Image (cartoon, rainbow, N blue to C red; front, side, top):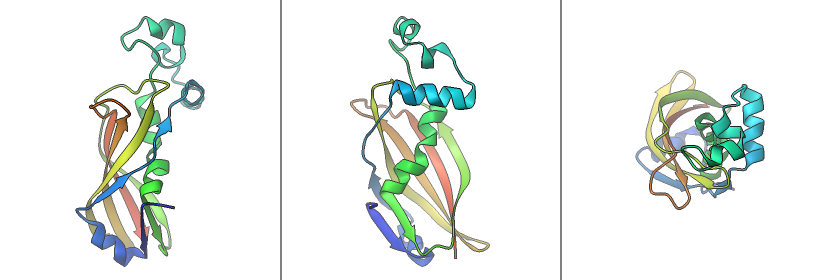
Length: 152
């Protein structure tokens, strides 16, 4: 069950400007990184070669930035659930940055804030500021503005 459950798109409007909360922590395993590398054909050694990466700039393998970003739907779903919308669509992103690396074996979570809600044809669009935090680090591993559309 999500931290915030709203019933229908009319209740989504009230979320604008609110901090919605943080997801649970998720471990980033080497297996997950390897599967992502296979899915995207991005087998750069800093992601998939633990031996070589140990001597590299990060002291070990790190997750792909886009792997971290791809966790947004799962982690945001822990924070926000909109019931009674006819459809929920990932409409895209406004801004994405990867300020720090996400080490394999570490844990990540999403801190979610609803920046804005606006009417669009057929429903509403919510802009969610999502900060991906690496446990024990003061610097986020990803910051992004996620656009979700909810149908009436």
